[in-house]
Image (cartoon, rainbow, N blue to C red):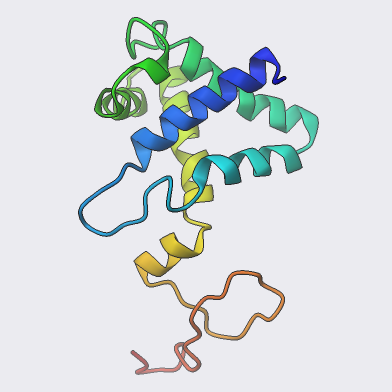
Length: 151
């Protein structure tokens, strides 16, 4: 049985991931395609206790503190995805520094994990200039890409 913090971390994480990386018509992978929630929880499990609890607290704060953050009158996860996205955008451009920090921390944490997925990397056309046999993610290699005049 998950603790109070773990349960609210998960709800806040799922709601934030859906708001920031929704399904779309332009072909970018969404939060489901990149397994963002599961991969974030795995990442949290690998962190030392203090850092893990700090990030868990961030997602629990947005879930439970939505009324205090001006995001809505109830839990963050009960809002529609567009309302959640708009709320995070408001936090990120707030004149009140603590709100901006919360919004930017949410975006930065999930962007880090979203952009580390092979589907997201493929969508932006990421490539490596050399083979990396120890790397579990296979990224296309463009040998000579750093040479003058290379495409």
